[in-house]
Image 1 (cartoon, each protein chain N blue to C red):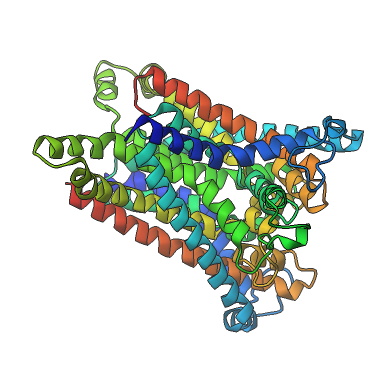
Image 2: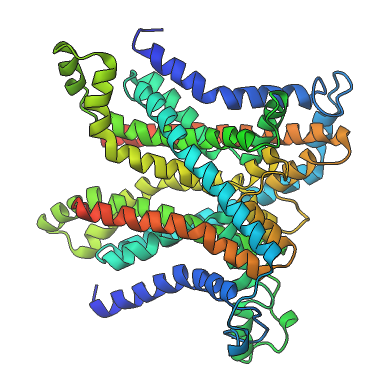
Amino acid sequence: MTRGNAPAAIASLVLASPVVIGAAYSGLAAVGAVGAGADGLSGAALVHVLTSSVTWQGVAWTVATAGVATFLATAAAVVVAVRVRGSRTGRLLAVLPMGVPHVAAALAALLMLGQSGLLSRLARLAGLTAIPSDFPALVYDQAGVALVIASAWKEFPYLALTALAVLLTDAARLEEVARTLGATSTQAFWRITWPRVWLGTAPAALAAFAFLLGQYEMPALLAPSNPTALALLTYERSIDPMLARRAEAHVLALLALVISASIVILYARLQHRGQSESA
Amino acid sequence: MTRHRQRWWLAGVALWTLVPIAALVVRALARAWRYPQILPGAGDAWPMFGAAATGRLTEALMTSLVLAMAIGPASAVIGFTIGRAIARAPRPARRVGLALALFLVIAPPTALGVGLQVATLAIGVGGTLFGVFLAHLVPAAGYLTLFAVGIFTTFDFVLEEEARTLGARPWQVWSRITIPILRRRLAEAVVLGALVSWGQVALTLLIGGGVVRTLPVELLSFVRSGSDQLGALAALAVSVPPMLAIGLLQVGIRRTGATL
């Protein structure tokens, strides 16, 4: 290790230590070596969790809802950032939901999208429904509609802020150069602005996706119990009165950490590629 | 784009961002909001809270405030110390440090909490405010390390070196050069760290074991027990400080002449 690397290595170790300790413990608990209900080394919990359809259905459902929400939020953020970039009010409005914590956003989604929520009342006013049960179930539903919309609403400001930052600095200057070289406004937008904004927002979209994968409070208020979101499944197992099942929480936690670590590696590669291209 | 079309876009963005917040305000202020009313009736317009519920909310608010006020400065110190070391490192070490900080930010709180739960129990702080403080410190330190790396990447270290060559001791360099230059950024970092703690739910539940009741935890509990009005009130209480912080940040940015 070079002299310049030493402080950074120590700093990184300090930073990572809580996760390393936690993950190491989870690793030992997953094979029954330590923890509540541990009765000697055994791969039973590991095998049970990794071969269970509940686990993989939960993982697939979590990835799908987080993926759709991220896609919707990114698309909306890019379009809105392009449309309102010239307006201070528009920029402020776009970033406002950032201040609302996820748990509060989940309650707002319940009030808006529940079967007796505001949308259902508007549908009745418009003569489309007569009673709450006529309105489609968007909350606790298997498709996770309310969860997807609430997640998109919550991630939208963060992605809009990123898209606006790209638009108001880098892209604006290049667009101006293209216009002076004779490009029409449509050509300048599609050939210069759009690729820059899309590329600039991609790492933030990946981070938003990773964040949604690990979200607990929104699924806790909006998601169905079958399939069970990965975060809910992990929490339920970790407080299970049957101590033997708590080892499963550690297996699920390790699974979630592996997924997050893969996304971090992907994110780092994406950033590195972006930096290499702009250099 | 015509001004008329931009107005439509602004109206659309306002509808998307403000209506859910308005729904929380209406629900918090109305004793009842019966189907199919679009707005509560005049007779239901004023909230009525029992002493027990108000006590729970106040206590949770105080717990959240104490945690946020402790996490803000603590995570700022940790984040700036680690961020400085990472920012000054050669590129490979820097990339590893940044990836680790990002990992702390995006790692699922339940996955982090399951491991941390046992660690806090082992050192005897599980189910205590101090245990929750230590748990919140993990993601907050990750956020502030990323924040600090960004700052120290453009920081002019020559000023510190000049002070040292003029005979300043390390603590004098910190107190007379580094901290005054970074004063504003440090203040922003304290606010950011406090906000990270302010919104935590899963870590608080796992490490606090239901004993440490913060505002978001009470909110979850109110909604699950069907007390939507109290939940909405808690949601507003938990949303106002971050929204004010964003507003203040916007004012600050505008004063500096920045564009966003």
